[in-house]
Amino acid sequence: MTPFQPVFSHRDILMLAGCLVLVALAGAIGSAATLPAIPGWYAGLEKPFFTPPNWVFGPAWTALYVLMAIALWRVVRTPAETPGRSRAIGLFLVQLVLNAGWSVAFFGLQAPWAGVAVIALLIAALLATIRVFRRLDRVAALLLLPYLAWVAFAALLNISVAVLNS
Image 1 (cartoon, rainbow, N blue to C red):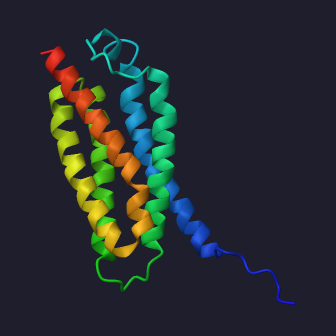
Image 2 (image 1 turned 60 degrees about the vertical axis):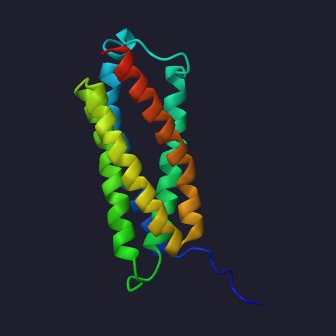
């Protein structure tokens, strides 16, 4: 009889925890910029008819951040010498900074047009990240597709808010 062999090593679990913490940090920065602006500034904006209720955003982002962290973890687990690995991780970090930066621009600075500029960069960085993730780990790339869909929807919302409030 062979002893129980865990599916993931302690190192894998620590790497996953690190990826979760990193992504959660970006989420915390975004929340710190967003939450104070919701009851006053954001509540007073004209919004398009397809704007979801505020309560939808928390659960949606939580699920997306978990998927993002798992995607990153899958890529981080690839051998360090794998061609494209460093670039993939770098692109992920760029899009993660832009993710937090969008909240700072839109909510923190209360500047919808600045949000449009940041979210356009975010979409470009996210598409590049998905492309390089796909070469390393197809599942990791697929895990980012719901995030891309949500960010595209957020871009439509952001543009609509900018236009309606100009």
